[in-house]
Image 1 (spheres, rainbow, N blue to C red):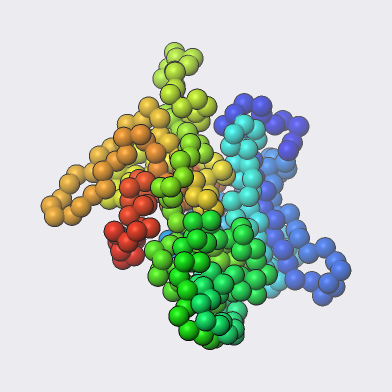
Image 2: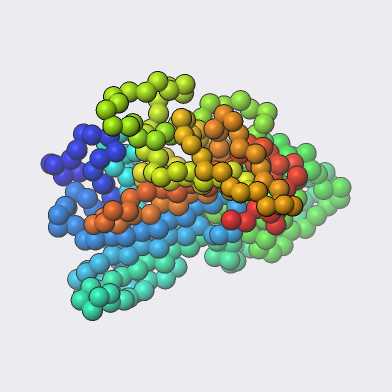
Length: 350
């Protein structure tokens, strides 16, 4: 960070954008820092929108724009960019900047805005169709389990099954055994998605690896990973919280939806889709209720204020006001309903 870094929590934007490019020399360094907050005020302007979801659709994606790069850099990036890493957050405190996207670049676009501004846009996408060339061809004997198959698929993709399959998902997959020998031949993505749906599990792709997990495990009692609250009112130095440490960064008013609530906080890279899923709490927070429309059914809000992080959208402008994270939170009842099949996959869209 620069010498003018702030020590105040939730104050002072921080970011770093690195792009990996293909080079003719395999031993040469191929990662280039495009922009970072340590160069302020000379740093290039960057805008971004990053979405992570526990659901198969929408796919994980990142749209990142960089303004007014030099001509040689533009030419190199247009033809050779393959991987992008974006860190964002604040200079210090609980929301200190860290990675919010680390994945492949699908497409590099060139544009000109407002006549004078040259813009390079990185279209980054992680989805099953990106892995179509990762085929599997295995044979399994009698009484082999779905977990055996998933483990072999993930190993073939050089992944770590212990990190990519949750403990509960593992136990569920181990319980389902094939009654006779089975041959698996075809797309890894296809088979993992089918096995996931068969057990009412969620699966997603981060970078180029598959992950399988439940959204909420009712058998495990956990405290919330993060507690959020609204900013303190003018003239107040402190408010007693029932949850201990609280991040006072809620923006606006959370809004109820059919499966939980959508809320926005100052950009927080701690919010992510992961294994085990994050559990957050809204403390001392008013949630705008949704109007009931018969015969539609809406999941009741959890009176404890607890939500499972189902989708995260980070968005920001290094030279603008936007610097926030929007969260789609599921109530624990809804998340458990997805696990036991109370709610069908068709009801999981946003």
